[in-house]
Structures are given as structure tokens and as C-alpha cells.
Image 1 (tube, helix red, strand yellow):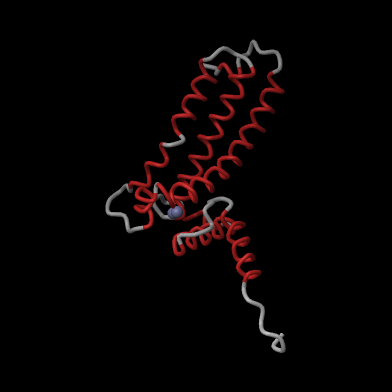
Image 2 (tube, helix red, strand yellow; image 1 turned 180 degrees about the horizontal axis):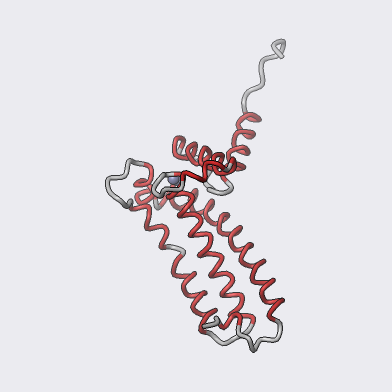
Length: 178
Ligand SMILES: [Zn+2]
Ligand SMILES: [Zn+2]
């Protein structure tokens, strides 16, 4: 069945597809921002008792930290359901695009973070991409220091910013030694 978001009775389908593409991409970008914020302000503070399980060796197939994946699922399911079964129009089109963006980001996070970086899925072939190797190195720094970078896809830039800030803060050599 065709989701209400793309109902053939709607007059401006090409425009609708364009807007869906843009909103979907923007949602993914915002989700990385949300991930940085939630990871730093929630997971490493109030929710540390759950996130802690991800910073220790895993005893079985799953860790308590995996439950974070379920946080963003209900809003995504609600938005996608409304965008699929609601009445055709812009509100349902936008809801579908945002729901799809959250789902796409969640899937990418799961595959790249848990699957590739932590080796829980056979995704080693991603090693051939320099960006993926950088991303993994940056995430390892997060695990070693339990500090920034808190982002995943944005991790390499966050790490570079953190290092630049540390260099700026480093005491300058005493006069005569420059
Ligand atoms: Zn963490
Ligand atoms: Zn991790």
C-alpha cells in the first residue's frame, strides 16, 4: 500500500518527494546533535548506571546500554504510522519524513557503532573507508577517556576540536624559552 504521505491523489508529488528528501536528511543531522547531547548530558550523568554496561566487557550477547536504542523508537513508530495511515496532506508527509529520518539514523548508528566499531556484526569491510577508520579511532578515545567525542558520525571533528582546545589551554613556555 502507498503511505498517505505519498497518496497519488495529492497534486504536488514531485515537490513532496523533494521536501521529504530534505527533511529526512535534516532529521538525520539533528539526530546526531541529539545523540551528542543525550550521550554527554544524560548517558554519562543521570543514566550512567545503564551506559556503564557499555564501558565494561560484555558478559552475554546484549548489554543494558542496548536499551537506549528503544528510546527513539516510539516517536519514530508513531510518526511513520501517522504518515502511512493518516489523511493525505502536508502534515502526514512531514511526519513520515521525520519518522523515516529517525529510523534511518537509528539503523546507521546501530550498524556503525555496535556492528562495526564494537565488532558485534561482520562489518569489517568498512575498514576500507578512511572516514570509518577515523570514526572508530575517535570513538575509542571516547571509551578510553570517558570524555569527548560524544558524537559518533561527528566524532572525528569533535575530537579535533577537543585537541585544539587543549593545545590552546596548554601553558605557554616561560619567557626566554620560546
Ligand atoms: Zn559513552
Ligand atoms: Zn561505544
